[in-house]
Amino acid sequence: MNSKTDIRALTKEQLRDFFVNNGDKAFRGNQIYEWLWSKSVHNFEDMTNISKSTRQMLDDNFVINNIEVDAMQRSNDGTIKNAIKLHDGKIVESVLIPTESRTTACVSSQVGCSLDCKFCATARLKRMRNLNADEIYDQVVAIDKQSQLYHNRKLTNIVFMGMGEPLMNYNNVIKAIDKITSNEGLGMSAKRITVSTSGVPKLIKKMADDEVRFNLAVSLHSAIDEVRTKIMPFNHRFPLADLREALEYWYSKTKRKITYEYIVWQGINDTKKDVEALVKYCKYVPCKVNLIEYNPIDDGEFQQASRNALNNYISNLEMNDIVVNVRHSRGKDIDAACGQLANKS
Ligand code: SF4
Image 1 (cartoon, rainbow, N blue to C red):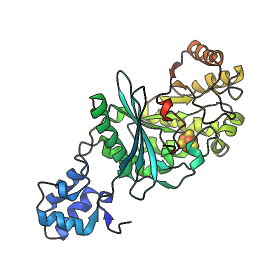
Image 2: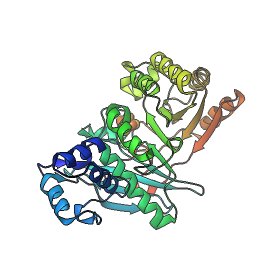
Image 3: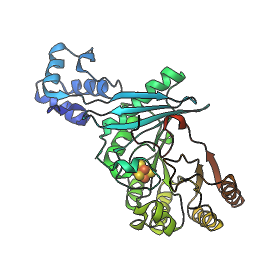
């Protein structure tokens, strides 16, 4: 591994100071910052309006840690799954999901995951480390390039639903989103970004206090504590009442609706009681529900519920004026669908 400092860990001010301290103008820092972020170069050589001696000086002091698309799989439905190699050789996965109206990047925030949701392939990898802000940003840049190359349009949306629990890597996720939305970065609208969490109450409140402008989704999967704890064991530490309180706080501060992500599994959360609990939970904070089709990661206890069970959820939610969408998974043939990211490629 290279022992030089990763230049992208420096703020713009630090870069400006670096040049001033080395007898150059602060403005040079702005130029380099632009090359590093909005132009996303991965090589000092490519900074064409910078003198050769300055590029050499940068090369002597810094490195640009970058990611590489190590393997790419394309699904019949246009979904692209990438195995992304980080600078230390670790692999995460990012997915490009095209639909008629949008192209969405599903990005990872951790190598493995700190949590242990029983239905999730990533949980089996355990958390190895958090991704740096630049590693998250670079996934978006790589997928935006693929979107333009294979679908002739720029990336429109980003969801933090790849590997990892984004709120357990709070600072880097926020830093990455700042860069993605800044005009000095990709200039994307925060409204097109969704952070999906399993629900860490104090960090949901922190996001509200930090006045973030992106959307919040919560992987709920059950509104009954005993059931949720069985499938998402950390619910024991952060029970539904605490989650509810944090979401009420979020809404009071941001006035933005929550999206609940919800999978219905056979024999786990497919009864009338489960449906009623969800309907009740949905009344606490303005929200909508995405019912997500499940892709079994093996032939174990988690299997997609019957159409009938799903219809029960849909009709009850609708009867109670709760917006519900059914999300069919994409990229199933390449294990790129929700819950399937586990570095199998
Ligand atoms: S569902 Fe999300 S939070 Fe849960 S283990 Fe998988 S990656 Fe982690």
